[in-house]
Image (cartoon, rainbow, N blue to C red; front, side, top):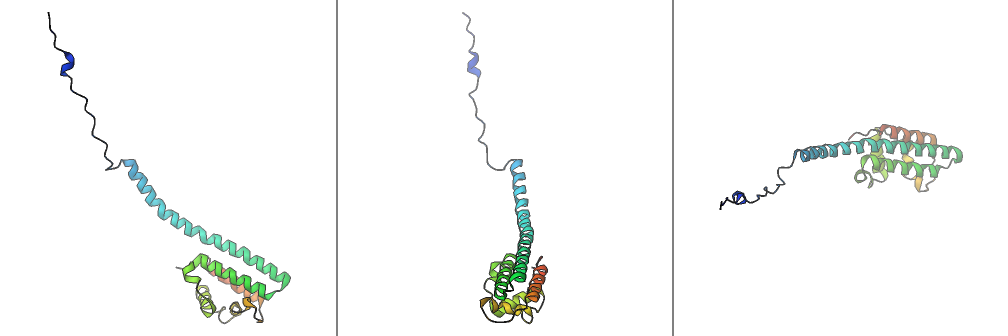
Length: 161
């Protein structure tokens, strides 16, 4: 009898590969990380760039509506209330709630003067925005007030930091 050696006895047992390590990541993950890191500042920039023109366009349309309403009705209190609300909302959209929301009276007018580079709010037609919206019987120069607010909006279309 010929005894042949068992060919299976020379085989080695199955060796499993080492487990896959999570570090270092594959090149695709590095590329994805770089893309995300680039997209975050880009999205912040785009949000800031396109938010203000939208607020400006909205404010401009609202100002036109107030102008038409004043031409038809000549109601001073309605005009001053609308302009006061419009200025406050636009200023909060552009300069932030923290800087604008707490301003009242003379501080509010001084803020409008400073940001509009004018003196029309403390010394001119814009002075009525302190008391006229609340029912005082001050005389309002409607067309001049509308022009002052329009000029302020245009001057703050691209606000300086």
